[in-house]
Length: 394
Image (cartoon, rainbow, N blue to C red; front, side, top):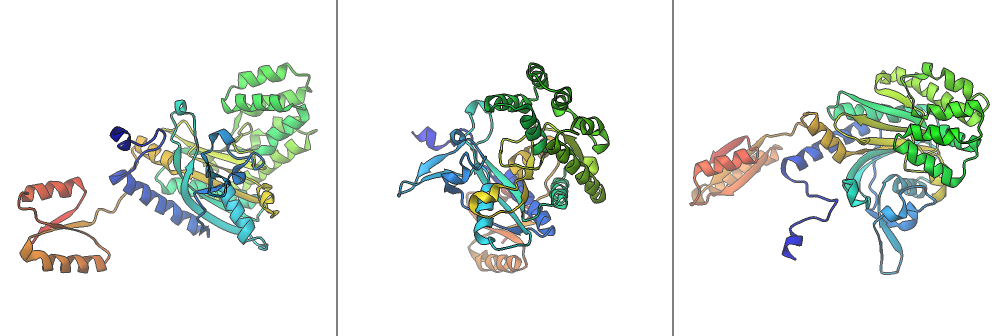
């Protein structure tokens, strides 16, 4: 029993000392970037009614949720994703608002992953949501914020893959895929098994241009100038054609922002969140096999909460970003201006007065009453261990 008390459950961990300091500094820096774009902070509960994340919403499958009951017997769930919670808030508190609402947040999310996947079950997400703007300019602003956040974190080499939910949905509708076929196809695409996609599609009786469009799901494009073949094949499929047109318009605005070099287009990008309706994007860099940021447009999500409003947002997984910075040997600068005052009985009053004066000036001071059993060398070693830059004995 005592052994269990000393360890965390599988999938969660303690964060302390320097790592915790760096994580908080990084969170503050990214929050500052979001505020520069005019986003205002919001906090939502760690748990919500189960229906907020139900199948109709299109978020995390029920089996991956941490579920429990309150005193009244209502089914509750720890949030696996903060976007539905923000959508609920926006529908509640900004129901009559007709102008765009910009919100940002940071908080922990909980997904009961299979233990064999080796993923953390608790992660810190930091993100932003733009409610009430259906224009492509909002798409571009969101991607610009992502790029500026990743650069502010210290990353120099990263890529934002951008796609459109209607490209896949348009293919699904045109091919008349059944639900089980769609699920199989989604699994193949998620696993980047495009040979399997080709094999599955070749067994169907589809028009040649539709087969060619399915074959483009695994392609990467640096810009819309590469969309020529896709445009020609999509001429008879309005939904797919409109998706390509939106990506072309987005690229033109990103050129103005000066960030198009960080962006590539991936027509086969899909998300585990079914509520995305338009632009979808994910950010990747060296040192992580998974996306460190994901986002997209969800123009119908708020209707579940009683407000018809176009919306787009993203979330950065801070824990993955921290791991990437460590692997790429990118330092998160932490303020080390810290004073240690060690005092004996005669120096107590002076030590306290000095500490109060320094703290009122915004400086950090640690006070330690001298232990006769310890030497100055012991206190010096303590200061070094705790990254204290100055030590004074009174």
